[in-house]
Length: 346
Ligand SMILES: NC(=O)c1ccc[n+]([C@@H]2O[C@H](COP(=O)([O-])OP(=O)(O)OC[C@H]3O[C@@H](n4cnc5c(N)ncnc54)[C@H](O)[C@@H]3O)[C@@H](O)[C@H]2O)c1
Ligand SMILES: [Zn+2]
Image (cartoon, rainbow, N blue to C red; front, side, top):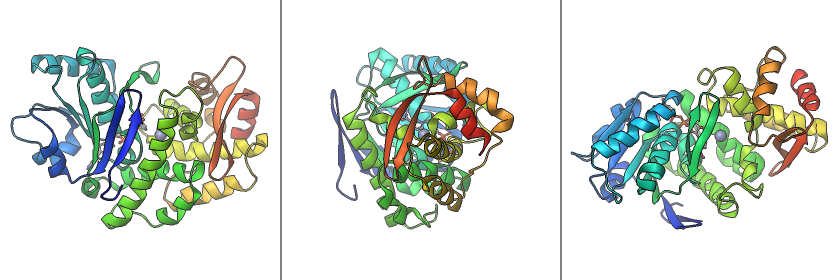
């Protein structure tokens, strides 16, 4: 990915993912494009948006990923006379990427989409792979589409203004790649911070993007079970987000706790090599990520939330569990009693 671009193939074609400084990325886009961003990103980097392009500047936060906001963006596009060939630019973190992406997927049944991810989480994860969508009051990401972008431009310099907690939050997904796909990534991650040089940052971000792209190319529509490896820590993680009401615990933080819990669960079930959970826990702690949660105090709510997970079936819950470090498999029909037992002893 350093200098050389990566191409992600999908059912309708392919798109490039490239490291491009923000100014250059904007200059490459045919205007006037419709830019969706949020107030934090706009305050720090909005001056790079070319004059005259319509900008939708959202209040930051997960609340923006709503049906109401989806509707407002579609109407904003219509009011701005966006045409079938008008480009929508998702300029922000994963919230903006998912929301603007879904608007691009649905306006006139699909207009060109460019992702310019600005958070670490969005750069290593959400901007690649074509999943876009919104939350419903009933649950997270309950409406959406598989809608590949025309291109993903990754400007690493914008990470310099990312709040430290948000940087650490993104580290959770980076550790996830190390745990489920490539343990050798760990050597590159240790010591990585927001103020690291661009070189090491690009090395890690690039490796994560390659890992995700390879999985997504194998299972674009999330049907074979391959793409589910990216869900390690997410069954428990999403449930933590639900019981805490989306916000107090950030996505990566919840996934961090979830990875520890699911490693312990895997060991209990005999799926995961013994000792893996201890390593997962130590790695995440060293990154400054949370690894503890009041599981016993939230057991009812967590179990209810997990039963609504996409991987849950008739007779039990579904988890992407480590077999050993660097390998993961989808385990379905896990008895809720087993899960409760694992969570209680954490
Ligand atoms: N589509 C996918 O495949 C996928 C994968 C993972 C996560 N997601 C979604 O992504 C969302 C989380 O993404 P996120 O963590 O990026 O959250 P986010 O978009 O809310 O961004 C986090 C915070 O950082 C701020 N920010 C972003 N870039 C900044 C910058 N360069 N400088 C200063 N501030 C900046 C934002 O304003 C926000 O306050 C969730 O909704 C999750 O469901 C989607
Ligand atoms: Zn995630």
